[in-house]
Amino acid sequence: MNKIHVQSKINGENIEFLCEPRQSLLEVLREDLGFTGSKEGCNDGNCGACSVIMDGTLVDSCLVLAVEIQGKEITTVEGLATVDGLHPLQQKFLENASLQCGICTPGFLVAAKALLDHNSNPTEHEIRHWLAGNLCRCTGYDKIIRAVQEASAVVSKSA
Amino acid sequence: MKNFEYTAPNTLRKAISILADKNGNSRILAGGTDLIVQLRGSRFQAERVVDVKNIPELNELSYGSKKGLTIGAAVPCYRIYQNADCVERYPGLIDSAAIIGGIQIQGRASFGGNVCNSSPSADTIPVLIAYGSKCEIAGPNGKRRVPIEDFCTGPGKNVLQPDELLVSIRIPTIKNASGAHYLRFIPRNEMDIAVVGAGAYVELGNRKRTFKKVRIGLAAVAPTPLFAREASELIVGREVNDATIEAAAEAAKASSKPISDMRGTAEYRTHLVGVMTKRALQGAVKRARGGFVPNAVQEN
Image (cartoon, rainbow over all chains, first blue to last red; front, side, top):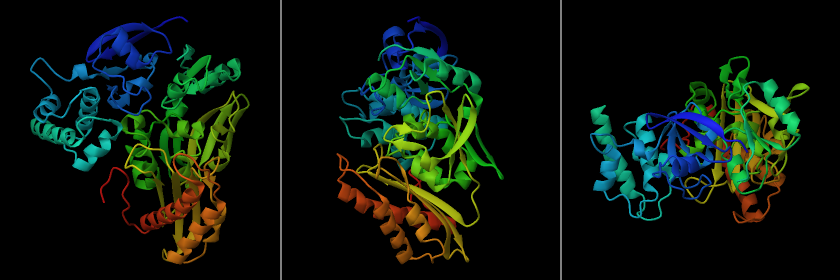
């Protein structure tokens, strides 16, 4: 099968790659492009560990074909921190110990980033509803919710 | 996942000729939340995957006071709940759109895809039945329209021919003093498949005291999503009260033919049909009378 040439923007940088139609975005991100922050949990859209933002919309990268990102902008967890330091979400996850094994964390961070981009001051109910597509089997969710609430206070103050 | 050819036509005409060409070995890709899982799990093989997201008609989401609402078959759930016409006029659609998977799934999954996947437990179909929707289908011989309740023919099966595709779902204009509601029973708060789902649309008459028009749709209680016709017609003209709603719930139970599986026994599901039908009707009536019934995103 011929490989297909794809041009896209990932974390603000123009990127080109060749892929087979059967390859998921997650597979190409991790194995060909080196963005190993996105994790493979269930590989069928249940766990959210592979969450990325595609043209402003939160998606599971295991359920996107890499060929579909032609002309699109992708944000992975690697795109959250800047030269000035961690994103407030990352900082608050650290301060609240909102992780143990860490496999779900990049997905939660990216999903929470998409939430705050869309609604910088969500209620607890809105945060829980928004994060229902991300599973964590270690810490329970309360510390994660708390971190998102604290990060939202920082983000909405600076906005 | 076995490899396949990928193509993304930008017109309906091209898409139909491509589908006709491989004669059944093409699969249509919209949001991919069912298809990619099925291809990966070898449930389906495809020689060719036809991405329909570049076709303008399949991305249309528009409302007109005469033509009603048009939902292009590839429009993802999040566009439905971000659309002011849907939010204001069709809150029953938001009930569905907000509980299909999580936010990630809603970013990709379409009502059209959910309809074409034709699962008996599909969360979009009962409310589309309740709203009296029609499916607009395009094929080599032109277009045809099929009422949504006649679209599915069995679990995972529908009326589409291999060279046809679903273009859009058409929902009629809603009338004054009308309301709709969809809800499902699941053992968790979010992210699950319906044990039973029920959607209802009502139009009230006589100062909102009687049922003027009723349509009830059910999921996960038969080999296809079901239009509970008898239950719907039974209560037309009757006063809106507990006894009338109870009568509709009993008739809905009689029309369902559930199976027993890991999500519940047939007996349990039949009981739930009564409970869910009652709640769907109560929610629809409340909305028809201007009351507030929260969806999954809203708080009580």
